[in-house]
Image (tube, rainbow, N blue to C red; front, side, top):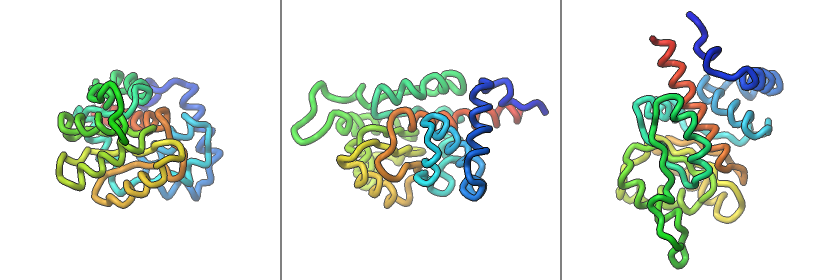
Length: 217
């Protein structure tokens, strides 16, 4: 059977992944399930940071659940326009998933003591049940999501890619996500994250789901 990836991936991407695999300690990469390996490789490809291998955490079955949801047409919900831009080309190239930013639901100005993204997240989750949620910049949006799911105020997303970047509220929000054991999740421990990395993780899932579908005929 022809390798579907050969006609899908740019040669530079393929060579980059080969070099990353070569550079990584096999003891780090090989114990991971194949789809988690692909997520990690794409994160490293997007960041140039081999040390991300030590920070990546995926709950059991989360990557497969996210890929299945995307293949079924689940929308992608991001915390920023940058994250939406990072994932939109791959979504369009594969399953045509709708890509939304919570800012479409956010007020023009931040509420007292809050953030626009948190307000937008609360509104968006009501309208996009079963979304794959990408949070690369706003720990307040992640905290809002976790609170709403815990209260039963909205359905749990199909997957949360929780990688807010920075220092204020970031470690706490990632810890709270880790404690939400029932929630399928991909996250980066520590202060690293950002729009490019959440986009990379989602793109890895879209790519693999699309290639699997092509291989199945």
